[in-house]
Structures are given as C-alpha cells and as structure tokens.
Image 1 (cartoon, rainbow, N blue to C red):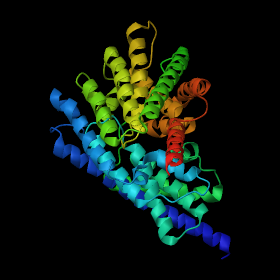
Image 2: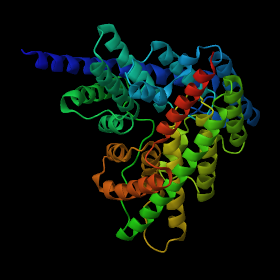
Image 3: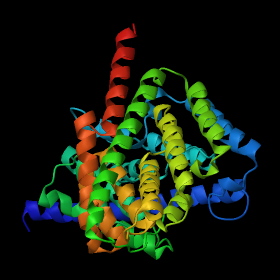
Image 4: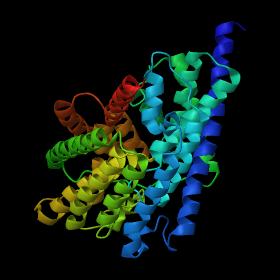
Length: 432
C-alpha cells in the first residue's frame, strides 16, 4: 500500500474516532445541562424556567452571571476564549493552531452554568467548540501535521452538530460554510464519517430526537410563495437588527470585566423574563410548540422582540453559550407570527403557522450565520419532506440577499471575531 492510501485510510479511522469522542462528549454536555435543570428547576418539562416564581426569574440569571463572572475573571485571558469564534480565530491564524483542552473545559462548565441559570443562549454553539477541541486532542496526541489537524477539527465540529440536531448532512455543510474549511474529496470523507458516527452514537444512547421535532408540512397554495418571499425579507431585516445590536453591545463591552458584563446580561434576561419566561435558557420547548402551530399572534410578536434583545445582550456581553439556538427561535417566532396572521386574516387557504415557523427558523439561521445551504439541508433532514425545499429556498435566499445587501458578506461570527482580534491588538500595543 502506497503512502497516499495509508494516509487516507488513517484519516478515515481518525474521523471515525473523532465522531465517537465528539458524540460522547456532546452527550455528556447535554446530560450535564439536564442534570442541572432537574436539580435546580421545578419539576415538570425539561428546562422548566417558566415555573419559577417571578423573583427567581429575575435573580437566577443575575446570580448565574455573577458566579460565571467571578470564575472567568480569575482565569488567564487566553483561557476565556471559547465558542465558535474561538475555533474560527484558531483556524484563520497564519499558522492554524490546536484547540487547548483548558478552553474546552471552560466552555463546557461555563455553558452548563449559563444555560441552567436561564441565560438566553444555546448549547449548540458550545458543542461545536467542544467537539472540535476533543478531535483536536486526538491530533495532538498523535502529533499530526497541521493539515491533518484542520481535518480533525472539522470532523469534531461536524460530529458535534450531527449529534446535537440529528442532521449529519447539514453538519458537514455547516463546516464548509461557517468554519470555511475548503472542500477536498480526500479531506472531507473523514468529516462525513465523523458526522455519521456521531449521529449513530447519539441515537444508540437514547438521544434519537433532536432538540425539537418538526412535523411534515406542505404549502397551502402557489400564491403563498409571495408570503414566503415576504417572510424571507422580514427575517433578513430581523437578522440585520440582531447582528447590529450584538455588534454594538460587544464593541462597548469588550474591555469590561466579566463580573460586570455577565450579571448585566442576566439582568436584561431576568427583567424580560418577568413577562416572558419562555425566553430563558435554550427555549426549545416553546420553539417546538411554535413549530407545531401553537401560540397566538401577540405572543409570537412579543417573543421575537424579547428573545432578540436578551440574546443580543448575551452574545455581546460574552456569556459562554451559543447563538445558533436563539436565531432558530427568533426565526421560528417570526414565521409563526406571519402564519398566524395569514390564518386569521387571509380569505384564501393557507399553510399552517407551524409551516411558516419552520421556514422562518432556517431562514434566520442561514441569514445570521451566512450558511444558507446548511440551513436548507437541515430543513430537509428535520422535516424529511422534499416538498418543503422550494418554499424554503425562496425564504432562505431572500433573507440572505437582504442581509448581504445591508451587512455585507460577514457572518455574526466573523463580526465578533474581528472585534476580539482588534481588542487583542489594542491591548498588546498598550503593554510595556
């Protein structure tokens, strides 16, 4: 066997190992969150923040933010770099670097505290970092060359998304669009293997369902394509507002100590949660209800504003959680609002509000993350309904067009990465 074939087979095996390890670590992360929620929150549905009395809705995220702030301010500055932004910075450096274990552990523990504490963040952003770092650890142990390290990081990230959402194909596309790993057949086969293995691991360990379920839906009539175009434009504008607000908050708060930034994010969430406790934590229970056509128009509109505001503060103030889930929630609420409005006021036959919520969810994800193809692939995998692709493409494409026209081609992760790099450069220039 020649060296090229040996190297290729070695990468395939390492991709499979990355899938097993990343899948297991992601499941451990999710079970840790579930354990914390079971221990801290009232009995009932998972993540039952809504059952908390009003004073706890206000104080819990503030207390969690203060605890996180005290912990983070005692860490070395380099160990505080976490999340997808951290992975991007490492991959985009002149000499792509390995992902330290210390940062992965900080991400793991910090996200558990933030989500259980009710901050308006998700678990999927942290899982990308955790999965990528666990695969990077394999490369470090084997002293793999830089190119193999990048392949392993991509494999771990894809495995994490696949295990989290049960969408292996969308996970592979996510790596190309969000992490911008250049596609090569020989280099991407390990990524595909990792995503498949991680999905099998998650299903075999009694996690066969993603964070929420999506019922198959169909377009009511052809005239509704104009409504989907309107939905895409509206979601694109909401994505621009979300990115702009997150950027402005992050720009002003980059130099703030964590003991100020984190409790402030908790305070914003806590105040909004006095009226809308559904925005606390991942909010996937409420999102699943929207996808099933539940809720009313006034609630959907209120959830859009409250989740956008609380999540933008959480992102801008560096809470150690992710933003993929909040974008899904905001888009789902926007689609639900349009669907409910059409159902109430349209004289013609229309699709269910759950159909519009599903389309809005992926349109917001695609526009905010600059990942339209990953969003459409996730739509197909979640619904198992090829008939939803045409309306999905219309909404996703129009949302992407609006966001690119108003914001340029950079995703929210690129915006946050640029801000962190600029802050690091300024800080180093001031050091003696």
